[in-house]
Every structure is written in structure tokens, then in C-alpha cells.
Length: 501
Image (cartoon, rainbow, N blue to C red; front, side):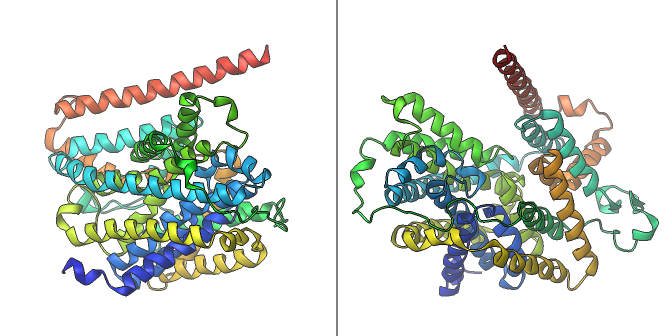
């Protein structure tokens, strides 16, 4: 298929529509880009791969960007990655500069998105070409490293490890496929569910349940009460925006965007870590650190450029190694699954048209985000006032219909949606880490294949340590990630002890 034939008005309409819908999802407190992509995922089945990805990437970029609206106007992060934006964005609103803060955040988000897209364009193909040479041993160790990094960067490493292992365990339910080196027999399946679980839990209803239904349950528990200030959002005076505020901020924008892109490449770390790290760096390098937290524009720039720098970075490991960079890109695997395409080292080389279409879609989504949020920011700000008691029933209906139709009308997929929706709700209550669980669930079958094939080929576990210099390097990285987690845990305990004294 010719690349130019993909770039139709319909393609760009899907990008624009996805971006606007994503902005709306991100702007409503409690709803996220991940939820937007999960809920709209079933819609992509009939669109084809390129058009479906155009919609989902628009949702991704728009959803991440939309979180800045309630962060600045209400001091409520619209998405987890917008936490650091509240530090200086809301004080600017209190001073009557809410509209200026929104425009600063939007432009910074655009810069971060473009820089991360450039990193994706140049770095992912090179990494994929390198990864093609990997044997089953290196592929297994990469997945092991990804799960270790996510566990190490969780709030509690043991909980992160448990969540990842639980995800792998549930992914192995069903027949032990002969093509994976198995014997074709069922495992971990109760007798009364053998008919339904022969192929295991379907991925897409699991994703929609955890990121769609569970979010609704968590929000509904609060009673659907009006959040503070929703009845009267004050955006500030309609003064002419002064671009001189960006004078001297070039290094800040580049550094923060780079931090966001790098953090995005690390599997499962999340945007909140990227924005807080970039904000902290800017505060450390600033000549006037005392201004931060009191309405300093450079703090908003650092947070939002890192925030959107995550978008391109998180796609690098997905498209070059087949490992999602965050929860949202994990859901994008569902779009590829629907079309029968596997992401990994061979993806870019075997699907050049799809790769080019994704780059164009990301670029178009960032441009649409900039235009819409700059020129319609006062209207977008009103989105935060949409009552959730109207919105959530609509989303719940979309979740159920999507889960039911994804496999041509299988009712058990609706039960899967309910089971994992409740699982996500209780996981939130008891403190389980969702990102390691989801990545474990997605990568579990691949990890099993690579492990079994490695043992079949070499017949000894020592091959995982001696196969190549890459294997040795990966073990060193795994050890470093564990050491980092232990060091952070000990520091927290020392700080708690010091504060107690």
C-alpha cells in the first residue's frame, strides 16, 4: 500500500477528532488518556490499522495535554502526569493569570511533543535494527529487565514484583499452546470454565475493565459530588498573551523535554515521575528558586514539556522491542492485536507504511492540540464542569458494548470486563501496582516462549548468564535497578526516622 494513499482527509479527521476527545478526557478530573484510549479501542476494529492508530494516537496526545486544564484552574491534576503543573500553574490562576498559564503550558506541551517525536523517529529504527540480532535468551532478559525496572520504580518494590508476577500468572491461564512449546493441555482453569478460557482471558476486555470500569467505580465511590470550584471556574482576564515569557527558557524546554523522553523510554515509570523530575531540575538550575511554588512560569514550562515528552519516548520500546513504555502504550498493543500485527524489532521494517503513518499522526496530533488549545482555551476550560453523573453512564455503556463486540459477540468477554474492573478497583484499594500487572499480563506469554525456547535450544539455565555480552549487560542493568530500589527505600526509612525524631 502506498504511504500517500493513507494520508486522506478521513485520516486527518480521525487524528483531529481523537485529539479533541482526548483533551476532553484529560481535562475532566478523574479521567485519563489511558481511559480514553481503552474506551475507544473497540472502535478501531473497523477502521483498519493506520486509521485506527490515527484515532488512538490523537487520543493519547490530547489526553496527556488535557490534564493541564484542571491542574492550572482547580489545583486538581487531570492526569497523574500533571501533578507538577499544579505547583506553579494554580498560583498563577490565583493571581489572575490563569489564561496565560494555560497558554504557557500548551506551548510547552507542543515543544515536548515535537522533541519526543524526533527522538522516536531517529532512535526507534536504530534500536529495532540492533534488537533484530537478539536470540531468545536476550529477548527473555529484556522482558525480565522491563519488569524489574517497573517493580524497582514502584512505590514498594515487593508490591511491584508481586503485581508483575500476578499479571504473568493470569496471562498463562488457558491451553498450553503447542506453538509455544507446550503440550496443548489446559492449565490453571476450573472445569466449569474450560469452554470459555481455552484461549485465556481476552486482552482487550481486560484492558477496558482495568482502565475503564475500575476508574468509574473508584470515582463513583466518592459520591459524584461537585469538586471544589467546578461551579465557577475563573480563567482570568483576557489579556493579550506575551511570548516574551519564553525568553531565556530554551535550555529549560530542551532539558525538560529530554527528561520526559528518556523517562518515557523506561518501561512503566510514568509521566508523574518525568514532570516532577524536570520541575526539580529547573528549580535547582534557576537563579531564583524561591519563586517556585508561587506562580513561576518556568516551572509550568518544565512540567508540561516533560509531560508531553513522554508520548514519543514511550513508543520507542513498544515499536522497537515490543515492550510498552507506559499503561497507555500497553493498550495500543490491543490495536495491533485486533489487526493481527505483532510489535517488536521486525515491526518497522515489515510495516513501513504503518510506521510512517504513526509519525505523521503524532505530528498532526501535536499541531491540532496546539491550535485547539491556544484558540479555544476558554471553551475547553468549561469542560471541567461536565457532571460526571451524566458522563460516566455513557462511558460505562461504551465499555460494555466494546467488550461484547470485540470478539464478535462473546458474552464471557463482558464478564471478563466486570471481573477485571472489580480487580482494578480492589487493586487500587489495597495498593497493588497496575502498570507492572498490565505489562506482566501482556508480556507473560512472550516471556514463556522465550524461556522455553532458550532451554530447548541450549539445555541449561547458565545460558542466560553466558550467552553474549548483551546478556551480561542486561544482568548488570537488572542488578542496578534492584540496587536503586533498595537505596530509595532505605532513604525513605531514614527520612521517616529523622522526621519522627
